[in-house]
Image (cartoon, rainbow, N blue to C red; front, side, top):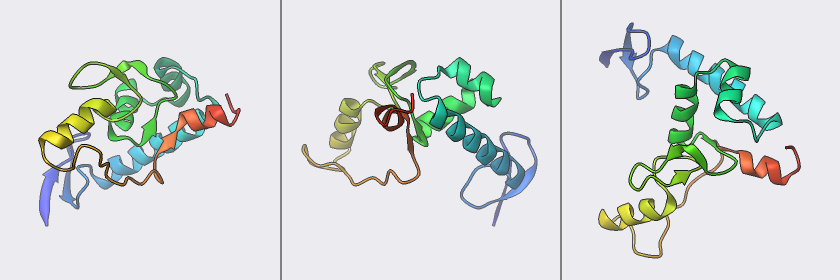
Length: 133
């Protein structure tokens, strides 16, 4: 087992695949749950409104968006593709750049798309379509 220092609090912990100690991981999950609950009822809320209402720092909200754990209702000017700078709803790259990167890395052919599970992701746009805005 590898020992590491938690990047959030600095405490020593046994690394098990997640780069946070148990206490910080529990806090992160608590913040994620608060975000999900708030966004379920307020899918069109801005980054600032969401942060203020949930107590979750904007940087953490952006982290969840970059990880794809939550998906914005629409392309947001504060979340940009790391390759071309185009506004995106989640992740690190826009669909076009992600496709180009996969092709460049020979991970798939031009028309292929790897299967992805959306089970653990929250799609705010879906809530808006259902009339919960």
